Structure formats: structure tokens, C-alpha cells
Length: 220
Image (cartoon, rainbow, N blue to C red):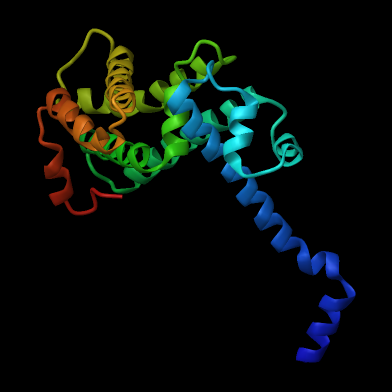
């Protein structure tokens, strides 16, 4: 039986090698994204050229243009990765079954952890307010809209003070979060992101975020 399997692989070398090729392509793509994320944090989106990314990505120009047509295409992939992180985190928080205000704390603490430890996720967040990238603001607006239902539920339950505009409160929470991240990035202190966001959560929600960790099922 094993001989049969070996012969099949030998007769189809292209099929047998495809997983390896796909893995290498994925690694190359991730390497380009990470190099771009690091370079954007150093010199900003406008101050970074495609050649800057290429020099730091350890890949050929051909490989880079195979995955991305230009610098903006790379930026849009980073924006997508931030949106993906938001969607995943909200879904996991909702799955805990905690009250809405606790879910908000969970979401922001988990996003803070990811932004602090994942350079690609962090770059996507920062880029969503870059006016030189086509439609980047849509990523920011989608983020606030995704969080609005949780904010509304928290207000209606009495856990958060009522605001004149529920959707505006959701936007303010996102604005405060991204402000804390940008300050940490500007000071080259990404390791302080979680601490800064915890401080903001204490002011926003009147609850020490550390208490969330003591609630069963409240961590991701």
C-alpha cells in the first residue's frame, strides 16, 4: 500500500510539490506585509517607497509584484488584516455570553494585545486614518459600526451612561483607542499599548479592566 502511495506521488510531482510551493508563497507574502508594516511605522506611508519595502522583505521584485501590484495594494491588505482582527475579536467576545459592557472590555483588551504583539495588525489600524490611501477611512468607519451594537446594548442595560448619540460613543471609543496606539508608536513604545488602553478603559467604563480577567469565560 505504501509503495502505491509513493508511486502516485512520483507520477504527480507537481501535485506533490504544490503544498510546499503554496507554503513558500504564503511565507513570502507575509514577509512582504511585515516588512511594509515595519517600514510604515518608521517613515510613514507617504515616506515609504516600494523599493524600501523590497529591500527589507528579503524577496525578489518579481515575487513582490506577483503578490501586490503597488504600495497601495500592500496597504489595503494591511487594512483588511485589521478588519479581520476586529471581526474575529468581536465574534469571540460575543461567544463568551458576557454582558455587553464586559464584551466591550474583552474586545478592546484583546485588540490591544494583538496590536501590541502583531506588527501587521498594528500597521493596519494606524493606516485606517491615513488620508493618502484611497478609501482607508472606510475601514475605520466599519470598525465603529461593528462595535455600535455592543455599545447600544451596554447603554440600554444601564452599564454605560446614556449619551446623546449612541453611535458617536462607539466612534469615540475607537478614536481613543487609536490615539493611544499612535502615541505609543510615535514614542517607539509599542510594549505600552496594553497599559495605555487599560487606562482608557478605566476612564470610559469606570471598571478596572484587570477585573475582567477574573470573570469566568471573559478572556479570549
